[in-house]
Structure formats: C-alpha cells, structure tokens
Image (cartoon, rainbow, N blue to C red):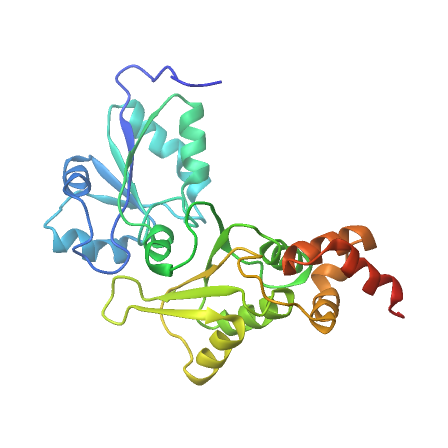
Amino acid sequence: MDSQPNHLTSCGQLFVVATPIGNLADITYRAVETLQSADMIAAEDTRNSRKLLQHYGIGTPMIAVHEHNESAMLNALLSHLHNGKNIALISDAGTPLISDPGYRLVCALVAKGVKIVPIPGCSSVIAALCAAGLPTDHFRFAGFLPRSGKARRMEIGRIAGSDETVVLLESPRRLLATLQDLQPCMAPQRQLTVARELTKLHEEFVRGDAAQLISHFSALPPRGEIVLMVGPAGEDDVEITDQHIIDCLNQPAMQSLPPSARARAVARTLGVSKSQVYALITNRKP
C-alpha cells in the first residue's frame, strides 16, 4: 500500500484544478491563486480555457493535454516537473479526470513519485445531486453510457437493478433514447431527475418518472449539458403487474441472462419476489 510515496527531490508538483462548469464566478480563491502561480497550465482545450484565464487576468502559459495526446505528453511534462516546474492541470469545465482526460497522466506521475495536489471546486455530478431530490447517501457515477450493443444493454440492466442513485452524463441528442431504453426495465414509479445547463442562465431541473420525462422532452427537445440521475430501485411500495414483469423480462439486457439470474435481476429491479418472476419465465412459451 502506497500511503506516503517518496516524492522526487526538488521535483515540481501537479495541481489538479477544478474550474467553473458554466458560471465563471464559480471558482475558488485557491484555484485562481494556483493558476496564477503555476509555471504552466496543462489544458484540455487551450482556446476554451483562455476565456477563463483572461477573465481573471491570468497570464500563465498553457500547453494542450487532451485524450489524444495524453500519453505522448507524459515525458515532456515529467521533464518540466523534474526541473522543479509546477504544473496545473485543468479540463474544459469542472473537475479534471471525472469523465475528462487526465487519469492516465496522473497514474503515470504517481508511479514516478510526483506529488499530486487536488484543488477542489465545481463538479457537475455533485452540483446536480445536491438539487435532484433523490437519495444521496449512496450513489454511483456511471459517466456516459455506451452508445450501442451488449455493453449498453448490460449497463442499462445494472442501472435498472441498482439500489442506489445512479448519475449519468448524457448528450441532449441522446437523452430521449436513453430514457426510452431505461423505461421498460424500471418500475413505473421509479423517480429520475434531469439537470440541464447547470449554473448557467437557463439552468433547469426536470423531475418525474420515465414516462413523464419522455413526454416532457419529446415536446421540448433538450439543449445544453445534461446530467441524468436515476433514483434507486424499490423506493416505493407500488403494485407491479405481471405484464410489467413480462415487459422487463423481454428487454435485451435481461434476455441475455440465464433464467435464475434473470429472475433475480428482474425481481430486484421491480421490487417483487424472485419466485413470482420465475413463475412467469417458466410458464411463458418462447
């Protein structure tokens, strides 16, 4: 266990700095001071980050470090750190590494003994949870769903059966399709919240069950950055019909499971007994 790594003598430090997710005022004094005092800033998109730096009068030079060059930049950054330079790592918005580039770089630098210093601040995940109106004592961050195939079906199944709030990031173009994929796998009373354009002028929270959200966003196509939160399974004691169980059994994510595991997954998803589900599986004709 590496509880206190031996940092390289006279080596610089990497500061992982959270930046605003929309409203430029949402940045800490410490983050501004760190960006001002660092020898260089490693930014996901230097053009985007320049707006923030200009707003706060920060003239620290920037270099681009993003998902396409992260590995290639490691040696150059390590050379700067070996020479005692301090580097601030920022993403386009929010906390770096959280569905953003940076984790490969940080893991590699940790292995080299470089000191990593977090400068906390904005995170769309935490901001959305705070106002979602869903349980927050336990939650799971699932990032972006796979777009298609078995990986997507399996993740939909995991979300449907989760006993904790699940937080997803989603594109406005794909939100409706994701809600439509989730709906048949969940009890009709299962609560969801869509947070849109957090901290910006048109910030919006839309709360309800899957059918209500599908209706809302069918009429009003969403725009902007989106966080989708799915409340835990089995929140409410509402009767589930055999037809609803059959609909859930018919979902691709469930059909790929053997009968016993399928019955267990659907029972957990809908909050009914495994025996009730298994009886429907064994009595149905293929």
